[in-house]
Image (cartoon, rainbow, N blue to C red; front, top):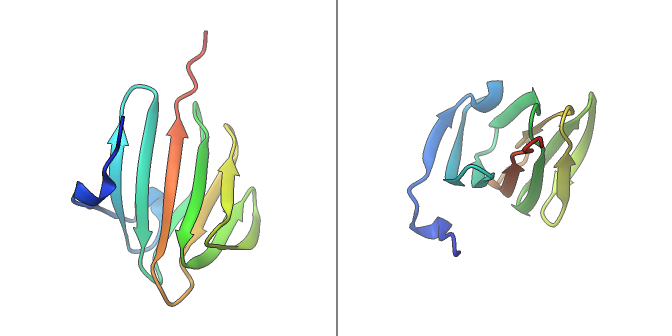
Length: 112
């Protein structure tokens, strides 16, 4: 399956997960995964939130910001991968001067 994010119109998600401003999201979703391409304009963020029943993998394509991970903060920039396991908390802020663009995958953890 090919997911063509370029052909999708981004959805504007105000205060995504309690964050500042609006995230622009192009998304594919089925019963197993959410696969998303995010754009955070300067000054916007994904609020700190906890993953219950799933985890999240983020790969930063462009820009830089601050990653919040289990109460700590660290710089995050293009080429880095961020991982939030089930039960952990994280968030991401664009405190740079260009768009922060990242790819995110949220696999649903199906219990057997």
